[in-house]
Length: 473
Picture 1 (tube, rainbow, N blue to C red):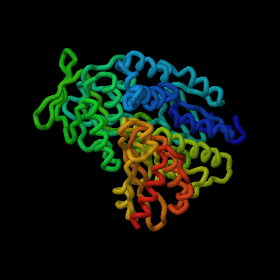
Picture 2 (picture 1 turned 135 degrees about the vertical axis):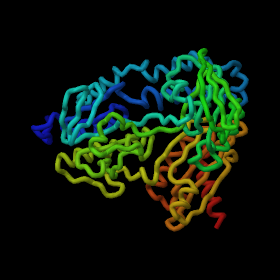
Picture 3 (picture 1 turned 90 degrees about the horizontal axis):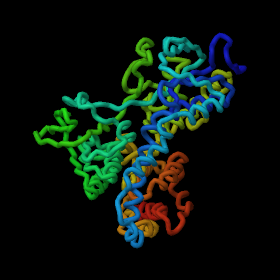
Picture 4 (picture 1 turned 90 degrees about the vertical axis):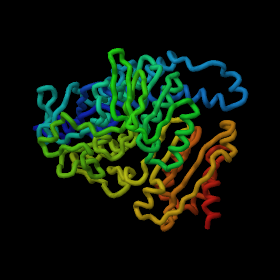
């Protein structure tokens, strides 16, 4: 037991949830001398490793690469066939280690963290029961992630729909697939399964990726339609039925019907708090546990909630960012050292509020960080926006013939700094980190002129955006 540990508890810290977020909380706390245990009821490594980030991107990559090859003379002529579906699915499976967690469990052991397998329930301050056995700790961190939200549509639950888990782990590709939802998961899986040969219909209540700049959804709808996907904006099912032969029929509010072999529900996620015993502690709720920027659950001095379970930013990389801060904050408190909880300090997740980067691995890709124009105006900021056609950049034309894309910056005029950036186009994901640094570092527009983009790359758009911004006066 560490020198910080109390002789009256089994551990300094118990982390409930052994996904990427929980692993990072445990690792950073262990590195600071705490004795830590992780409780995991499924596979160590969590949703991202087996059913989300990694397998979904593996499913998308082959189709994106094929389309990119077809946009270039020379390679276009070399590509004479379609995707090998079996090979794509097999490659996907390698990224999940065949849905076995031996390697991840071995890492936990090598990091000096104890792994407890089973379902955990929090029964009191520092008290965690796992399948009937009680463990105690000076602090508990919840890193249980999120679960799919199933809308209340008549017959939907009884029709046994796919969630994202079933989609990313599919062993075969359905001939016809209905995707319910036009968010990130729905859009990505529409591209993936269309490239694998399925006839896909997307039903989205609002514009695709409606939280992004409006032009993003328009571009993605056009791209999906060009791929043969039936995109229906404003279409809402009133009833779902699956017959004895497995055929799914979706009846829309206008009375029309769509038939498919499977229906994928991708209508968002909610924090995974059911079954943790939080109601008995007065900490229930579906909107995520309220935490401060060190991830300490408000109203407690021992309970932390990190990642999707707190509802702040449902992204793996952002959860890992929170985990690094939380793991060291927990250790600082238990070791009696100073907690650096001022904004942008070592033990806080300040970026959750102003600079959350995210990429949608569609084709075209979508990469954005910070505030959209609408969110900036809603926040009362005095802003100016600037947009530029990515297709007119020399580096873009080298990437693909007839390159289509767009970039937009949102600038806080009072401070002279960027507060939001959005890019859409082939290969734009790699533009995002420069925008994230500009926002987090509050780099003045005048100083950005001295960050010279290499030629000929797509990054030249930064120069063009600055020129356009200046010309607007």
